Amino acid sequence: MALAREDGLRLVRRYGAAERWLAVLVTTRTDGRPSVCVVNAGVLPHPVTGVDTVAFVARGGTAKLANLRANPHATLVFRSGWEWVAVRGPVDLAGPDDPLTGVELERLLRDIYHAAGGDHPDLAEYDRVMAAERRVAVLLHPHHFTTNPAGTEHQETP
Image (cartoon, rainbow, N blue to C red; front, side, top):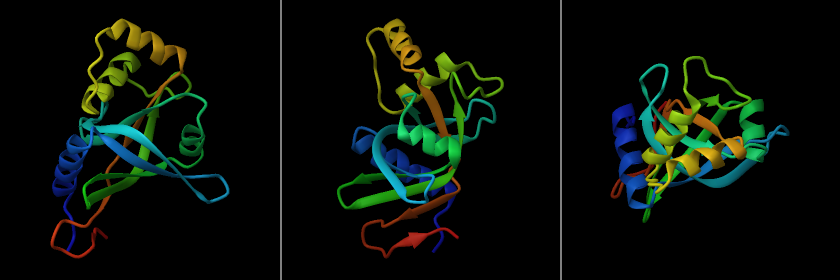
């Protein structure tokens, strides 16, 4: 049984909210091996297309960012208890070294922060840190979902 896009995004929102928006990120190293880390990610409209994306913020100079620049595809896995949903697809990057036409970076970083459950008492300080760390917005286009809803077998979209 295929998992429709809206059903997949519904699960991302449910499991993300239940676990403080923590997700496992899987990228591919230049040698083809997987690289895995944990990020805060949320769902929000793409700042150019308006289509829902699953997004997170990466600190400049990190392995995950180097991996995404070399191979702009990723998988994010959200879980709550034994239930999980993986979302995979191509990514867009928007940052100081990755300009995305028509995007106001400071606003986008704030929007992602809020979508991933963040609430900062001093947004000017938040903006300063994001700029100092050369943070990059990573916008994953959710093309495929995989899940194991309670009581069902493993499901994957084609």
